[in-house]
Image 1 (cartoon, rainbow, N blue to C red):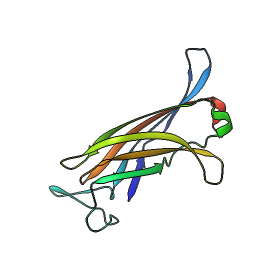
Image 2: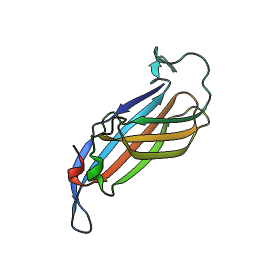
Image 3: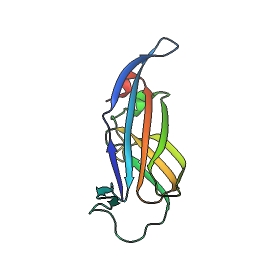
Length: 142
């Protein structure tokens, strides 16, 4: 179970070094694995909707940003996506070994959304913070 908790999205128009304008969209949030933990007394407990049983610590997952803008693939041109991740809650031994953000077409063909791919090893509680910056032509947003 992956629960994405986005923060407010920031959209700005920036001027690139070649003098053209680009839309800069910043996405920030936290991804919780097996539900967001609940503080209880001196410890943490699992959310009531968390899966029961034992979870293997190695994981590979992909998800769409819930607050992703709808992009028009034909107008994207040569966009730039950057991603940075941080372990916000990770148990005793944890690592993120791969993080990527991609523009992915909707199964219906349009629009195009931002999808995140993560791979690593996580204990419990498991929370990964993300920051994604997209630089696109202003006309690329539907």
